[in-house]
Length: 110
Image 1: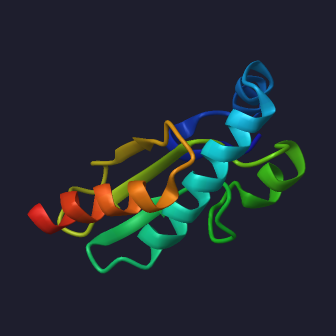
Image 2: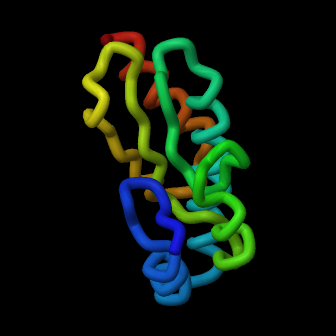
């Protein structure tokens, strides 16, 4: 069984999706997808784990398991961080530009 960011089994992520309203899940997933794509190209980011990225190990199974998006969690490891030092971003709303700006400010401080 494939796992999503942070080791969360995809079936658990699918259960979580079912427990949320479809509109909220979709908005949070869409914003997380945009954020993951942005971070994957950022020079201060070493690695991004998000099942909606085609480069993610869980992508194939996630694309056939999850409906209405890949979820609101994006795991990030910064360039100068230790190999197991991951940060989890929990996208709590669908405002992708606001999330990008928030993280850009945080990355500029490091």
